[in-house]
Amino acid sequence: MNAYDFDNTIYDGESIFDFFIFALKKDIWLIKFFPLVLFRLIEYKLNLLKIEKIYQTCEIIINSFFKHYNLNYDELIEEFWKLNHKKLKQQFLEMLKEDDLIITGCPNFLINYIKDELKVKNIICTDFDLKNKKVNFICFNKNKVIAYKNKFKNKKINKFYTDSLADIPFMELSSEVYLVNKNNVKKIDKSKYI
Image (cartoon, rainbow, N blue to C red):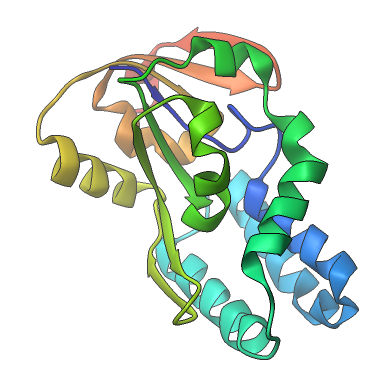
């Protein structure tokens, strides 16, 4: 089994940030959250973001926006993917096999829309309950390891593709690790990071 991160690996960008910008264009009221979202994105890029902060930020936005507006989520998500489908990297779509795993912080409501195109039967992602406006699980950092072991026990991963050192805990489960930067893929010596 090979494992893949989604954002900045299979998808060119941060899908949840892109979705926030997409929603912002739909409703300028969201602009009040832009500094907070941008700050969290910077923390993530610098590998300083803690899981608790993600939960806190998501809860603030969900409770303030999704509860405030009566949205047709299916239409919104379909429109988002019509605009952003081009950001799926063909080279990675061609690499994916049915028994591979995508393990990602991308929320289920986004990735589930395109899961058939991804061809894999195993996807572990952030669990947003849009119906109840609640975040059940953030698939990030050590939570990726917990979620993986809950589903696959001690099954070894052959190759893991990611863009971020936030995935260091998950790298330990993989025989080989590849760092992705846009379309460049470089095998790294994981022992330098673990």
